[in-house]
Each structure stands twice: as structure tokens, then as C-alpha cells.
Amino acid sequence: MATLFSRAVQLLSGVTDLKPQKTRPLRELSERELIQLESQIGATLFGPVPKGHRREFFNDDQNHWIWHEQWIDAQGKQQSITTRYEVQPRGILKVRIGEPYVYIEGEELRNLNMAAQLYYEEVARKIYKREPKKLR
Amino acid sequence: MSAESSMYQVPAEFITGAPAPEVSVSAQSTTTVELAREAVFSTIGERGPTPEQIAAIELHRRIIVELKQLRKDDFGLAA
Image 1: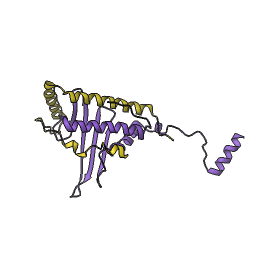
Image 2: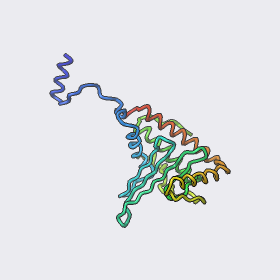
Image 3: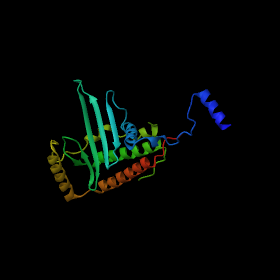
Image 4: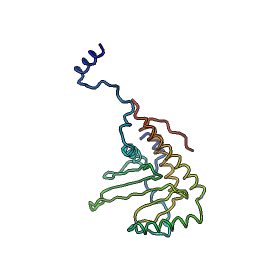
């Protein structure tokens, strides 16, 4: 009977696979793909992305936060800037190619703290559907 | 983005807020970069992290541990 019912549903709906749907679709995603999803949320933490800009902000599964911003300048040339914040035993080290490395302090440190905390809360709720823990 | 989270929006300009240290990095070669790193580390090592930096390190470590756990647990999207 069940087989007959399944066959009828297949004929009516065109669905050929009546196995239970996966309840955890993200399981199919690699860690890299998960991080790409997270980055889409990370990019929204700093307000609207200007037209023509591409922004990424994510944790790379090491002790690093990556900020990448890409845009076309007035001369039509593609510009980009990537900043890596490394969580080190002595502080949060800001690494940007061509610039001095520096342990961030003050407002910049507080802003990064806020960004990281918001990132965690947003991805926990919106991607993993979990209530984030209180970390402070 | 929810109205609640936008209240705490982080200014995009914050990445430019750091004071300029004395060490500069050409980034042309790994050796140069590594030397510059060592210079930075030794400078900071003499002073040590501030209480604010220590608190930040702890916060970021906890956040990263939680993120790794979320990815590992693979809870998936709710229906």
C-alpha cells in the first residue's frame, strides 16, 4: 500500500525521491562554504556596502579575522585592501600588506571586539539557528 | 539586518584608527616580513599587553572556539 501511495505521489508531483528530507542541509557544505556563508553576514556588520564595493569579513577558522574590501576607483581601476587581525598571546595584531604591523588598541580594538561579537551572534542565529552564548 | 543589531553597527572606518608604529614592512619578501614581525613582537614584549588587550584576547578566543563548535556541530537550517 505504501509503495502504491509513493508511486501515486511520484506520478502526481514528479518527485522521484520520497526519502525523508535532510533536516541538516548545511551538512552538505564544506567548512570553507560555511565560512563563505558567514562572510555574507560579516559584510553587513559595518552598514550598507557602497555601490560597486565588495566586502568580506570573516573568521578563517584559525585565530584570524579577515576584512577584505574591493572596489573600482575613479579611474576605473580595481582596488582592494585586505586586513588580517591575528589573535596573538600578546594582543590583536593588525597585518596589512605594505603597512606596519601593529597591536591594535583603544577604539579600534573596541570596534573589532564589537564586530567579532556581533559576527558570532548573527551567524549563530541566522546560519546555525542557535541562540548564541553570553560571552561577556 | 535587524533593527536591534544596527544599533550596534561598527563603523567601517575603524580599520584606519591605529596609531603608526615605528616598524615598517615592505612585504616584498618573507624574510623582511618576518624580521618586522620580530621587531614588533620584541617591542610589545617589553611592555606586555594592557588589561584591555588581555580582555580582548580572551573574548576573541572564546568567540573563535564557539564558531568552530558551531561549524563542527553542523546544526543546519531550521525548517
